[in-house]
Image (cartoon, rainbow, N blue to C red; front, side, top):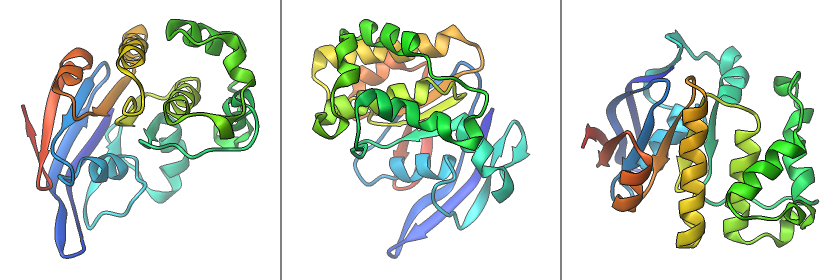
Length: 217
C-alpha cells in the first residue's frame, strides 16, 4: 500500500534520512526502533508527506503521491504525534470535528463504535463529556488514536502512541490496535517505540533506524 523509495533529507548540517526505502503492505504491524535522534520521527513525517524531502518519492498503491493527491492520501495514511495538542470543547466534540472536512464526506460519526473502543480499554462513556482541555497527556493520546481510527485509514503512523500511559493502559491500547489491524485485511501500522518488549508484542516485523539509515532487525 505505502512505499517510500530512496528518501533523503538533510538539516542542520546533518543527514536526517540517508537513502531510506521501506514498504508497508496490508496487515503489516511494523515496530520502528532506534535511539533518540536516529531519524524515526523524521521518517514517519516523511511517509505522511508532512515534511519536505530532498530526494526520493512516496507512493500510494504504486502511484506517486503528488501535491494534488495529498489530501486524499492523508485521509488514508495518518500520522499521530507523540504529544497531541489540546482543543476546546468536550472529548466527544473533538472526535466529531473531522467529519466536517470535505475529505471525509460520506463518513458518519458513530458514538456506539467509540463507546465500544472505550470499553475495550476500560474507559466509561462519561469520558466523552470531559473537557479536552482538561485531559491528561495519556488521555490526549487516547483521544487522538480514537479520532484517527474512526476515520478508517489504511495505515496509521504512530509516534510513541502510549508513551504517556501507564503499563496497564498501554497493554489495553496495544491490544486494541493489533485487533484493529487484524479486523480488516487492508490495514497496517508503523509504531515507533523505545520499549523492546512492546515492539515484540505489537509487531509482525521490526526495523531499526541508525543515523538516518533503516535496517531490518
